[in-house]
Length: 368
Image (tube, rainbow, N blue to C red; front, side):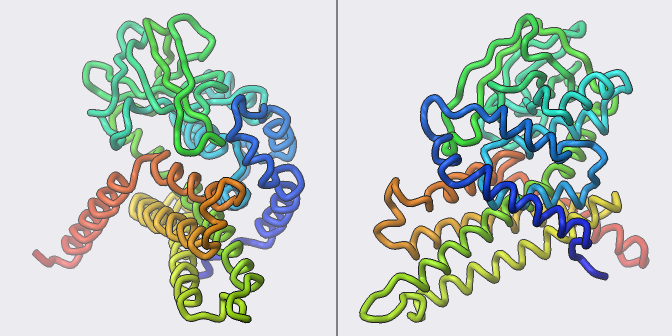
């Protein structure tokens, strides 16, 4: 079985890499740290014009784009707005909800944001602080990615203690939002408060298992984004190790540096393999998706953090300064590792999926 991208996806990857090299240089990512950050509307509109936000792309194309956007550290809400919020509408929304929002999201005319929990803990029913009553929502959610720029929120709320997802228009009555500081300001977050805000429930997202299945699907492109960032950080460290000299030799010739970067390479390639398998499971809508997605997410986040950290270490003293771009990778690695559930959530999901798969295998073979 060949877990690699198709020729069409490689062409898309090359197009995306050229586009992002021109339109999303490190200077743009760095500018996003300033206050106020630059408006991404023009960049988002151009991305939409390339057809990258459309529902008909397919899982493989989405993963390719996620990897390239992650590689460029692009300050755009692709993972949160397209891979999670729009995916929730596409898979769980009614025909009217899909017709009302998906074309606008694909065209870049509006953005969606997931508002799934309140606080920095792991996602789940106990983390939901919004309540649905009589088609209105009261409560709050934070941190909400792209919460200040979104036109619609996909909100997790409790309907008689049962978790559901519902759409709430950001500009509607009873919605208040404020900027929330995070480790990576290039992907802004917000705190959102709902006070009797009109809501429209997504009929296919009732119960935590239905919501978790959407998280599984979003975890796969999130893993690719982390692989892209890790690859770029490793390439950056290798390039510096070849050009920086100490004691008359490139520092890359010293075993201490070689071993560091070799370990990073192994971690990145392992994460890439796991991500490819998860992409196959997503494309095939296979029963192994939960295990594949959780494994890919854990592996990719671990590799990205390792690569970002060793990139700074390889650069030495300059790597710890504001002028060097190493901290951009470190910030993004930390944020991605917690955006769609943190490491604990995905490790526990991996273990639970393994236990389920092992139990199924034992039952199939008659082993007790």
